[in-house]
Amino acid sequence: MDSLNRMAIELVDEAIDFAEELGIGAYELDNEATVLDFGVDVEGGIEAGLLLSEIQSAGLATVQTRMDEVAGAPLPHVELSTDHPGVALLGAQKAGWEVSADGFEGLGSGPARALVAEEDEYRQIGYHDAFEFAVLAVETDEFPDEAVAEHVAELAEVDDNGVFLPVFSTASVAGSVTMAARAAELAVFRLTELGYDPLDVVTASGSAPLAPVADSEEAAIGRTNDALAYGGQVHLVVEEPFDRFDEVASTATDEYGTPFEAVYEDHDWEFYDVPESVFAPAQVTIDVVGGDTHVFGERNEALLAESFDL
Image 1 (cartoon, one colour):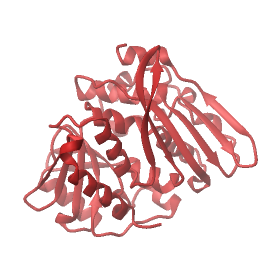
Image 2 (cartoon, helix red, strand yellow):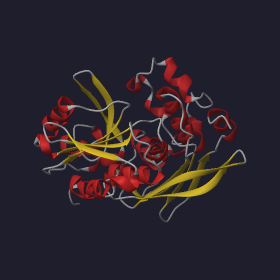
Image 3 (cartoon, one colour):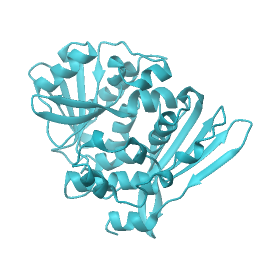
């Protein structure tokens, strides 16, 4: 497998070249690190969100939209498919880096994580990246400064000017898009946490509705997670059977039926205090090559309609 960060930097270059058309911003910090604004001070849009999702998955996934319905209301849905679920979803797209530096707090996803490779997923997929550039997408409502870029550069072992930070607010169009693109990643991660070998997942496809942009980060975090847990649908092709496939969908969790805003409030909005098991898609089909096809879970459109204020 080629460097995830090398593949991602090509997409970052595309974002910079077409920043005006995409409605995003790009600028250099004093230490020559680059920040790309996908939805903090700019409006961005659906196309910006799709490209951001491709950057997060290092170009190893196809991301697109389609029209569907939630409780009778026409809404865009975001679809992602990949034939490299281990590295694309766990090794790149997963939000696994808690960025904390000089008072700044954000949640990092993207291939820069593979340069550090301290999370269990990298041992499970047998991957560690080495490249001169680091691409880390950061979910935040404020701009990272030089201290943040230096923090990322130090951990990723690259020069400051090799750091590229696409940033987005959850309460933005691009934020809603890139969160909806995580349905397949949640299923693969949940399956791995249950003890399944992620290298036995052959393909992964997922979709989720595009949550309406909320008026606060907290409300947006609730809505975008509801879109996944109560509207996300996933199809996996896997090599081996497993006796815990029925635990992958959100319907198997104790918190099922509780809006995510309430789940986060119960944990004082500390992301890493929320049980990992709640981050799961609503419905999953798991197709064992040469074996059975399993279907678990269901969409909860009534809860989505309430969450989306339809």
